[in-house]
Structures are given as structure tokens and as C-alpha cells.
Amino acid sequence: MRVLLAFLAFFMAIQCSKDEPYKPPVETFPVNGVTLFVNGQALVVVEQNEVLMNNLVLPLDAHSPQIEVIFTDDGEPYIADQSATLGLEVANPEIATASLVPSDTFKFVMHGKSIGQTTFQVRLLYSNNPGYESPNIPVSVSN
Image (cartoon, rainbow, N blue to C red):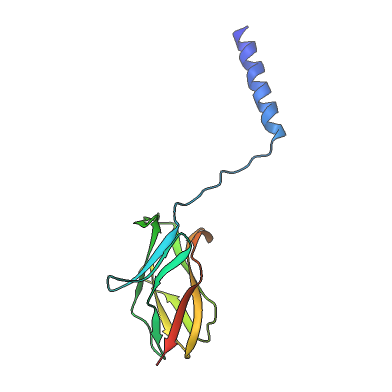
């Protein structure tokens, strides 16, 4: 009798779950900011989707020093797992470009191509899907 009741309970559970389509869990990442460093000095600070500090000026026809990216959760460093990668997008690549440093997952360099201003975004990517996307960060290129 117990076996029959267990079988009926199991069968009913299966039938109920068939009515609702499977929804994969949505993974959220506790990242809400990013800080960009050059030689240990903070150059850009973004928290809660707001640029709080920005001292990024690129020289014309030159590469910046390597810029280290630290993603943050309420101002504290967020340690991403090894599957995470860095994504960069410059709004106007005729003024400046950004490229990843091949030997380091969370470093990049920028190159000032012509005098002017543009913006760029920094992204924390998991399987090419953004776990975090910064607001537009202004960058100037000057002599």
C-alpha cells in the first residue's frame, strides 16, 4: 500500500511539473561598480552606475600605460571566477581605441588617435554575456 501511495505521489508530481515549462535559474552577479587603475593609482571610479571620478586623458598618437580593471560590489573588490572576461567598447574609434592585454584578463591599453572626446564602456562578461556593464565613461585625447 505504501508503495502504491508513493507511486501516486511521484506520478502526480511529474504531471504537475509538465504543465509548467522549465525556467533556468537567472544568475545575478553582485557587481555594481568598477575602478580603473594605472600603476596602483585610481584613475576612474564608477559606483552604482555613476562615474564618481575620471582623470582619464590620453596623449595623441600614443598608447596609455596598462589600465587594470577591478570590478566592485558596493566599493569592495569583486573576485570574478576564471570563466569571466573583460569586454570593452569605445563609442568613437576614430578618436580612441582600446585593446586587451593578452597576458592579463583584466588589463587593457587605450590609444589616442585624434584630438577630441568620446566615451567607452567596460563589461564583465561570462560566456560573452554581460554580468556588469559600466555607464559611458568619458575619455579625452589631447596634445
